[in-house]
Amino acid sequence: MIDLTDAGENLGTVTPILESGGNPFKLPLPPGQLTKQKPPSPGYAITNSLLGHVGCITAVKFSPDGSHVTSGSADCLLKLWDVQAGSCIQSLVGHQMGINDVAWSASGILASCSDDKTVRFWDPRSVLCVQTLDGHGGIVFSCCFNPQSTLLASTSFDKTVRLWDVRTGRTLKTVTAHQDPISSVDFNREGSLFVTSSFDGLVRLWDTSTCQVLKTLIDDDNTPVGHVKFSPNGRYILASTLNNTLRLWNYEKTKCLRVYRGHVNEAYCLSSNFSITAGIWIVSGSEDETLCIWDLQTRKLVQKAATQGDRVLCTACHPTANVIATGALQNTYAVKIWKSSE
Image 1 (cartoon, rainbow, N blue to C red):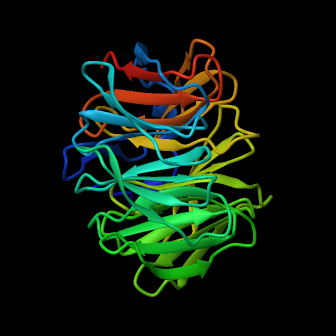
Image 2 (cartoon, helix red, strand yellow):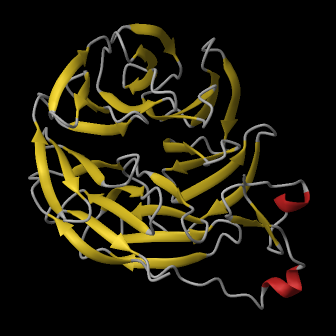
């Protein structure tokens, strides 16, 4: 488990502390020693381009075991890809308008949400839509399963979060969570909390069982927040704001611990991720046609990789391998698979 002590919240790096999974999360060195260390580049490069979509790719997600990646697109299609073979297994048809997000449950259910104001559940084996969830009054922009695969949270331009019972497809709770459209949602690893972000510039932390707001994180300039994600251990929140900035928050102390800069993000809700299969990296697309990777602890931009002309909107990190998938606004509408030299 990543452990960041009070001392570790100062800037810098020192002796690694091992997580339960064996990943180091480094604590600070004196400033004089920090300049002597140059973080290595993870050396990500494109190894495959998966062609098939005819509209911008808005979401990419790996399956729980990493064998498949699913992409959602403005062309109204979900595509299921075999990662190793680099081939499209099937196209999933059903949404009437563009798709905004996709999610895998731990049990292997696939969900998608769309401009058509619906959420759909899919069986990846039969590639059939098994349920359509209606209820939102606006575009459904993001969705996420809890770790137990019993709940799905969806957010909408109607300014609400809905919690759905995965078994019955019924709405359990509807929460008016923000004053503006809600851009993303994520559960912590226990499923006891979920976090939302909005164009109103707020990040809010919620109790899953009561749907009561527990914390509100706000930046000084109230910039719209395009994406939020819990760290793998559930103790921190990564927020992407539309002022070319990523922030890592200790939500218990409502304290911003790290600020990451070097990418361009002013117009679109770009997803950002933690990569922990080798080094501990922060990963995001950029509107200047690059893929950006930072060292989590030092905040240094360790790789800014050209994307062959793609303006990357969405990224996903493989659960066990040093692999990243990206999807873009334009160009060839290909899902790009990146592998690290680590």
